[in-house]
Image 1 (cartoon, one colour):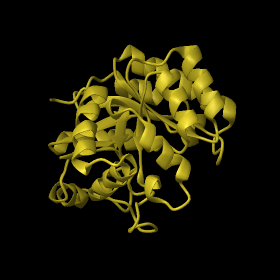
Image 2 (cartoon, rainbow, N blue to C red):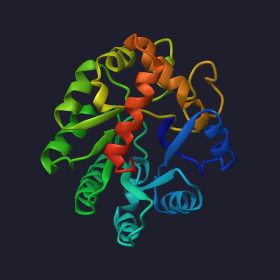
Image 3 (cartoon, rainbow, N blue to C red):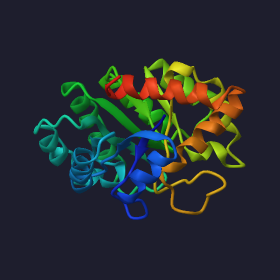
Image 4 (tube, one colour):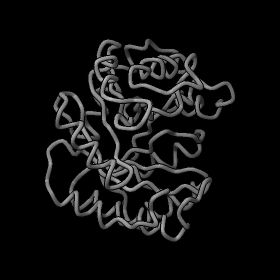
Amino acid sequence: MWVDSHCHIDYEGVGHDALEEARAAGVGRMVTIGTDARTSLAAIDTAAAHEGVWATVGLHPHEAVHGAAPIAAILGRHNPVVVGVGECGLDYYYEHSPRPAQREAFAAQIHLAASHDLALVVHTRDAWDDTFDILSAEGPPPRWVLHCFTGGPVEMQRALDLGAYVSFSGIVTFKKAENVRAAAAACPLDRLLVETDSPYLAPVPHRGKPNRPAFVPLVGAAVAAVRDVNAGDVERATWANAAAVFRLPT
């Protein structure tokens, strides 16, 4: 069975009907991601109501201007379906929040992940140096994921050197994503994850349509193709890796 290590089940374009669809497609586990207080609480509710679904609590860099205090408050109410902090990080492409606010919120959530012994889920766009600098300065938690990887082998190695698991999305199927495919080919199998980031970034042949967790086998097959291995090898490895990084039942 496949694991969608990063999706947004409660976002428009996905919805709870996607869960049965995903299971029918061979997706046995999903991690639904919080991006602010409201979506984090929704993710917790969804995970609590559905077997095989877990949640994260986080503040996306777009929302960083609001501060991480509400996220800390939610994490203070222990909930067994919460397996990670994030997604958090830096986004210098859109800059919906000022860069100083993004950096402050990111650092705060690194500490929250460490203090609650949870995985950290990191978003970075056009901000490689600052992302790695902050992780190095604050000390990366023992378990963290660089989600929706958009770099090449150099950026991947920098992440691996800091202990990351590297998660590949539907971007790996895009025609112009040679650098991402090169990273997917080189990533150690025991540090590899796959995701949809639903409802965004649907893989070929669904590109341009709302993404669904049911499409994660297409991402896995694309990763397997660039590695010249059987898709089952990627399926088994990413199942084990998701269990390790998020501490899911084995």
